Image 1 (tube, rainbow, N blue to C red):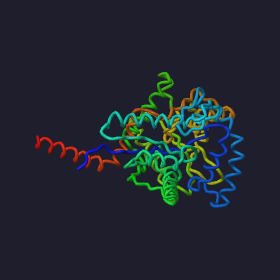
Image 2 (tube, rainbow, N blue to C red; image 1 turned 180 degrees about the vertical axis):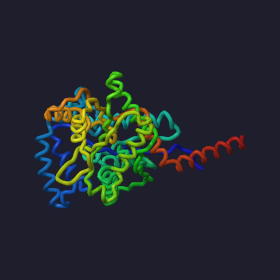
Image 3 (cartoon, helix red, strand yellow; image 1 turned 120 degrees about the vertical axis):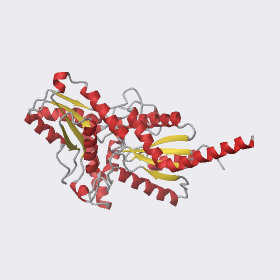
Image 4 (cartoon, rainbow, N blue to C red; image 1 turned 90 degrees about the vertical axis):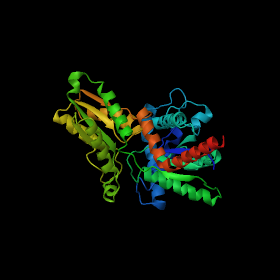
Length: 378
């Protein structure tokens, strides 16, 4: 009966983002070519439209990525990043790359500190930019992982986010099998964790940190605006649980707070002519200002890693849009993403461990039996 340490891999799945100006177009192509997230007709037609849209949009948003460039002193991303490999400093790198790498390292340290009896290794698998599923599977195979947990950095499940990452992972497994690459590990999936207590408490901590930027008089006038990525109404009607889970998360946080502050929920980042979940965050903020609300905290409730939707859309473009509407707001603060908040890291660890519970309990039982036999023999 063996009591050797288990080799356990935890794969953090995230969106990814461009790391330099010359790969913005490729990143956007990968995004618009994904039929799970943006439906442009599929097949040949989707491919052609994705190429056209990515070519046009890449020219428009390059300045945005320059403005929120995260790697001003050198590469903060993974070992797969071209900037790290070439030892160059990017002028156009999304924060999501360095911050996801920070989450990966912090989670791996957590496992090594709290569960030294097993060999935990944490990987990052991006959906639309490096590192891709193919690279991570090769690394997992080389590392000899026996158990692998897929852990999306999306607390609320949607077929357009976690679902797309899972489908991409499965497609890559089929592709690798065709090339005689065996995936011998046991695999487990974390679907969602939108009501995980540590996740909720981490969000509440971030809200309180942001509220501390208001003095007592201002605090009494603050409204909370929770904002999440929008979803096409067609997805909601098809049964996608994301919007419902967003609302469940918001209600759970406000219950945690004793419903101490007025709050609202909006949805941002709509793309294309489809009908999307309402209210749109920007429209909601305009309406609140016209109601006379002049102090707001913007809470990116589903974005656990800061990227263009938080650093650009909320912290820069929203302020500019308010000015362009000739509206006046006294104070608007954007809550930082959870990033490496200790409670969020613990939430991620617990979600992975929950999937492995039966395996770890079995190993603990083996170790106990082995220890007992050793004592009897002595």
